[in-house]
Amino acid sequence: MESEKTQSLLAQCDELNKQLTALLSVTSDLASELDFNALFPLIVKKITDMMNAERTSLYLLDPDQNELWTKVAEGIDTIRLPIGEGISGRVAQTGEILNVEDAWELPFFNRHFDKKNNFRTRSVLCLPIKNHAGEKIGVLQVINKKDKLRFDAQDEWFCKGLAAQVGIALENSLLHDEMKLAFKKSIQTLAATVDAKHPLTAGHSRRVTDYSMKIAKKMALPKLSQGNLYYAALLHDIGKIGISDAVLLKNGPFTPADRLEMNTHPTQTEHILNNFYFPRTLRHVPWIAACHHEKIDGTGYPRGLTGDQIPLESKIIAVADVFDALTSPRDYPKYAFGKILDYKIIPIEKSVCILKKDIGSHFDPDVIDAFLSCLPEITFDTDNAR
Ligand SMILES: [Fe+2]
Ligand SMILES: [Fe+2]
Image (cartoon, rainbow, N blue to C red; front, side, top):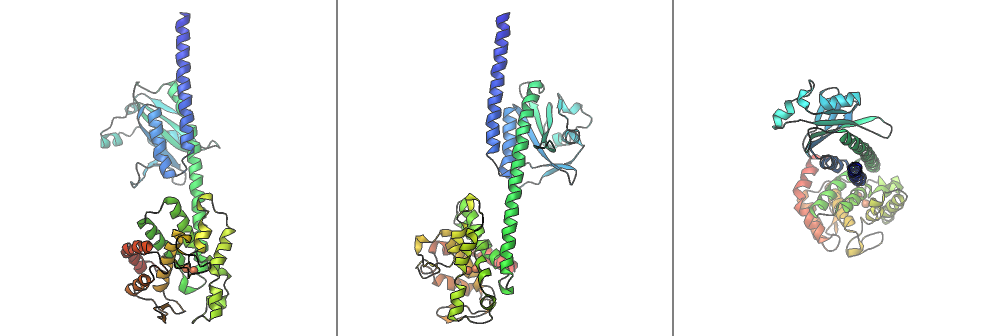
């Protein structure tokens, strides 16, 4: 008898140990994923597996709309439910755990989704997700326990632990997304402010960034490299705020002294950006931006770098930058083939000829190849984005 009791206690201990190990493992998995779009399906999968259930639904609270929302899959519209309606809506409203053997027995259960999806919801364990301040931020709904008729007290205890981890992971991820968005918007505004100093350069940095990103995608640049390119392209001309208005706003050809002053802008860009705080993943931005006027034959500025000394991202910006300058109006003349061309917009075909002529001297051949293959998308943008 005594031995039976011991055996049972040992089995319970073993089960508890397994659950705690699983909880620790899911905690570290969720904590290491900050991208909200990746975290959402990860939570759903982990909870379904660990609770030995058929399905899991994760809803987030939208207090402004008094609704819950969830996403089924990438690219599919979100599903929205009013707070107070259905199982999840009730739990969102009351903040109480709901654990039932058969959802169809509940008067407020909406059978519509089951009928539509040819599914039968039976046992449901539904609990609120709270943030570190104890505020409700969502609802977790685990459906159809696989090996039992319903979720028991131990499942409830375990799922509460999971929901607490989900709450922390969701808060971190939402905070991370907010900070990323705030950073991106500030940089976009800064770049637009510099461009707006002159009416003819308005939108230049945004267009150069758009073209650069299209080229980078065509060349299948790694994600990290694309991130650095994005911000370097947006900020490549920020050093122009250090150029005198007499030169920057000059209506007419530059004197050698004007040109000398204008050519200091990449160095000024580098100095300004070196004083920014970029996250570790974006630490190459100042250097990439500083090299956007270098040419692969070494005749560019400010350093006269050649070939591989110039980052690939800078070579991409160089093509996008010259293409935008050619296809935009300027109040200083454009030079090509050794002569003054025009102050006005140069047609796309002619601009492409000018770029092609400088393959191997100014421009990297692989970048020009990628640029040419996404030219239809780029020219569509030039027609529509101004
Ligand atoms: Fe520039
Ligand atoms: Fe530029």
